[in-house]
Length: 452
Image (tube, rainbow, N blue to C red; front, side):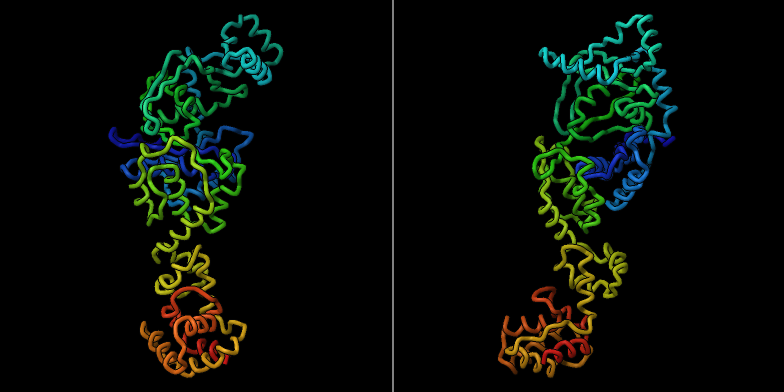
């Protein structure tokens, strides 16, 4: 059993269900909890909600671990609900006076909801199961029906000060008694979440505004258990570009897909945490800087639409600000040997870190292809003749091009564009003054000479 925190320590958690790959909306909830804990020196818990036997897959559990590691988040504790059934059984027994068996099938419940709507009544469960006689229950069980179990809400209004939405109040009489245990004996999220939060000492919960009604129900459960209720904050939701809610079926918005496409983890973190808030979406150097920007009270109440072009641009800006230490392992994996000098030279022209490999190949290639235009050939031949001996330093490019300009009369674009194309095969790119030493004199002569 995890240790309980000190009384003053905040404890927050992220509780994904491993039924698909995490998407940007999931990342928003994950990051807001993890970063609030990080900022205040609290604890961050990962709870795997894996009680849905039909939909849970172990590969999605591993994917959650990969996503957290990619984002740079390391939970202090991880628990799995599938391993905590004894705890739920004990709580179920302790709440026996608030629980009751019900025998309706899903089809019967759906029909009752449709009839209620047609009659202008809210589709709230009418507690018909509480009116069953012992004989009727016995008859239903003789038919082979097994009961699911509901938690009887106390009624009246329940309220809390929401960290995002301000004062919230909900009439429990407007809600159905929630099902807490299925016919097969497995427990549902609305129940297990309360038991886990109480057991793990969770002090603050940040989650989507689609959980507001659940929060009212769960506050009633905390009261029934005699456990302190966590502080609650319900953030606005992210939607796709067309305004639709996000789903784990939308693979294009999954963290896995974004990672495979080369989007920077820090950019994903900043985008998911800051979009739809009063804080401008911006590049950050690390998670500590991002955590300092998080203010739940500055989140908008309106849904925020995801703009993939905006995320791509943020990712590129993030790459431009990454220090060598942050990318050295990735550059080594790409067989790039240029070290910090090479990274500093090319990063401003990259949209993705992996594109550095393209420039490294350009620097080390023996030849770059097409011959120059006839009007540039003579100038390039003269540039090859004037190319100084090594070693080269930061002044080599200036001195060399100055000499070429003086000899050929070429200036500005007429001078530099043909040199760039000859030396790199590209019409644009990083500063040639910094690239030239990585090309080296022998390669530069071949590239210039091949065009003379």
